[in-house]
Length: 348
Image (tube, rainbow, N blue to C red; front, side, top):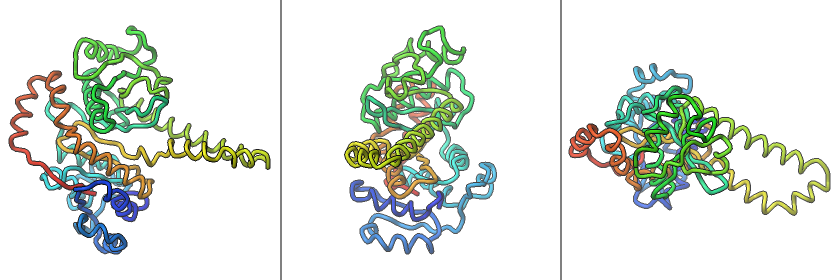
């Protein structure tokens, strides 16, 4: 029920991806009176989608603490509960980000060895695609957090981007080892001295982001969120300037017609809906936060990322590297693995 166009964007998103996501079942949590008519418009969904009715929903203006106390029967909470109970393999929501993170952390808890969960997304670069974390879950981080994020980000790159041994860089004010604050330098030293199953490139700068110098960019949540919003704003600025330029005269309009195939290809490459979804990493379960203003195609992309993480065994694949960094967590993880079950649905 979360998002500017919910529940239509959610049901439409399920319809957009269900044909290519074979073997996936969908649990739709929310107001059945609003969801059922939408679902009826897609006959192909009848066998793979099930409505779980609840009249309660977390509002955009709700504080995380309020959502935790009062939203135990909300669509968001029940979707996360389905993951915790093994009924679903992942949860996807376009609702209140703070509430989603708070609920996910309380219900699913962090993986052994992880101090704080992080948010990650991926985006187009000159070399292809790169990922960045943290995007705002933790405004202040210590060196341990940054190392954990490097491990989590590399695991994401393997599962979602298909890069078996990804390269990882720490975002800094310079590439020299002496540059940056003590936290970044300490994290860099740990990553240089250890092998966590990925290539540590070293320090990277802001201009390396668009260049795609590394597969995974690691930074604190304050910087990551600022970079993300700046990147989105720059893309909007460029597209606005392009539209204004092509409308300036009949000659520029003619130029647009001639350049239209190339411009369409550029638009498709930079379409933010393809990269919609910020993933919560470091939890005992998979949770994906869709942008609240996205449409059905964008929400479908968020669902696809969640399924990629499940099918890529994301949580299992990063355990080896986490155990290298936090050896005592290995025994705890083994005990939890023996008692944990696997889900087979996506809850929205």
